[in-house]
Picture: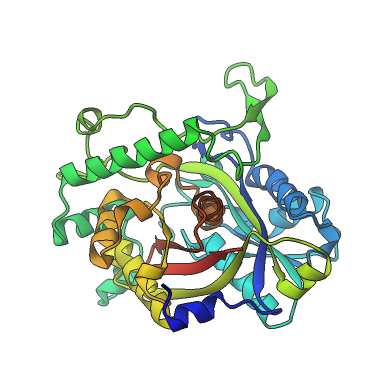
Length: 404
């Protein structure tokens, strides 16, 4: 039985921000997968087009689009607009980008939802994209940073450029999360994702993409259809994962218990309820609210603990009201800590696996989780779900969605 405050959250109003569609590309392995030769705008374009089609609206109905991105050139501002136009949106549909690291596409959903709530627009597209194949590496490692800031006496300022793997090791060592526990978590993420993929669980949310493929020797260009997430490893065992070498000396984070470097895109269509109802459109979900919380940069992975707690207070709900949590698995260490600290039921967290198995195209992950969450709520006939993740430099973000 929901408490009074939670029942208030469930109450529908004409001004609600509803989700008309939530889709994503398959998640491909960076550098060697199906999108290795694709530009980010090429991955995003068919996903934006599909989001409109599945929402049963016209591209011109979308007033504004916002895409989260972390690594692309020029902040994806120009090429993102190119993708929007190439997907068939008219010039009247405006475009902008946002970068809140791993939470970028969830932040895009939040910004577009706030614009709708404020009455600024009726309909918006929010999502994200990342080609880590094309943009990871020197662009992903901060080298051209002010010497003054790098040498600042404020350790938190210096820690903002700490490698993410080191923050994972910090969490593991400070909070007593051993290698065995992390590998066991990685195996379970793969097991859940493997079972889901074999049963076609992800098919509803995935947009298949015909991607370019360039032969490295002949340079011949062909096309191949990318249909499934490539990071899922069927039949992974603890014994196999436990043999992997840690990335950092004397560490515990490995390729088997950390999120994968990936390519992918995601998109949602959001609208005001009365606009959707006037056109006979049936929402699949509702955006309720977002909270962002800060923490120490050198243990950035624990950010969801604070963001989720803030979300409960902000919306007046309790943990027992939430049916499913999509918690991004940046690293097993920080995900285990968040589950433990919040006393979450592991069965409710990432029921179909997370980024350790599926991959983590950073700018696209939040809206990918949203698509996965809404589909899972529908299958399980549940109502409330939370999407949450940590973000580099020390932040956690959490958003509540309700299935319609």
